[in-house]
Length: 455
Image (cartoon, rainbow, N blue to C red; front, side):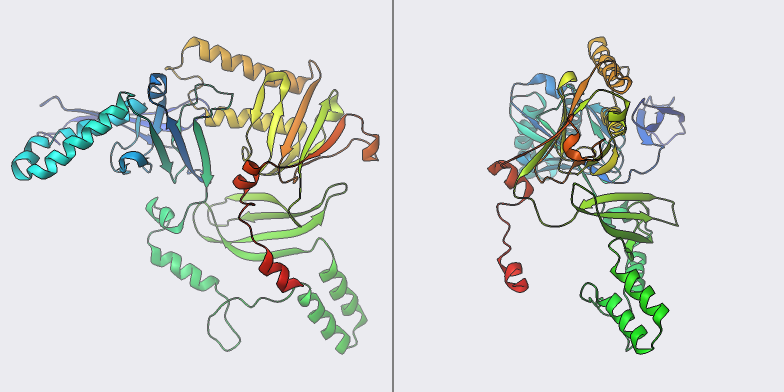
């Protein structure tokens, strides 16, 4: 790019342990000495996008050394400076927080001399902005570092792993159609619009419009009424029993979260003994093979939170069924493990499976666990913690599992016929704090109009 001559590009396909497959490319020009390197992700697109928010306090220089993986689809924002580093800038970089900010400042500084000649006012404004940006890069001022990647392949290091980092927040989200198109999974937005038009049911008059919504149970009632009118006893029984069953499977069209193709989602409502009504949803895509299953709570929001405590002592305790909602946190006091609400999402598993998923999730999220840049102290700390997780599954000694759910939508199954006879399983309710209600969006929830409609 500098001299126009041909150079040499070397490619290396490798894998960062417990993170992603990556493609390292290094370019070198023997004519002018120009060098460049880039990181590209050779693995699959993640099911959801990710957004890392790191709140930096002035004077904390160690936080500037946190390693950052920025994929070619990620953007970086610093709201305090109204700065946004687009996806085209610093593509596929492996650096630190300080390195990314310094590189951005150097990029703006490079053309300042030309700007002073052509537009002195713009150059002066950029000089003032550079002072603020370099103050962030040197740790002299507080700022917020936001890394947003729709592909889900970016990462910010947590030096306290596997413990919780109060300065770092991770949010996973579903990609929008525009983000899908930007990633190349939809050629253009018109294709998506065509799919949406095909998915809209046609009315009896031949036109397209909104989906006709029928009251709950009316489908079964209509089929039953038709069978009664025709005096067909077999069809009467089949129609009434089919549509009145509590575990009726319903199918409706949806969009694949990986490739944005049209797919089907199956859903049914069931009731778990000693627990509550739940909604099971499963979707599969014939185009790309992506599958997803999810468990959602049914019924009303509980007035109180619930804390489930299990004393794990034998193999039967490891085989207990566990329902963990996406609002529940997990605590294991024996190894000082505490996962915030939202970690792992909503899952249905066993006690043993929950510990295994915790280990897999920590290894996936904290991708620099065994990287070359990790010092021996942090590496030994992680190895010791991973060994303690294995000891939990091997039952080297009894341990305690606590699932704290502010919405009371989590459950652990008993090992006895009657839940009252299970001495190792305890449930306790508590009043939610104002902060918990605020985080869940309950403080501003107004159900007056809905209550009036039903009453």
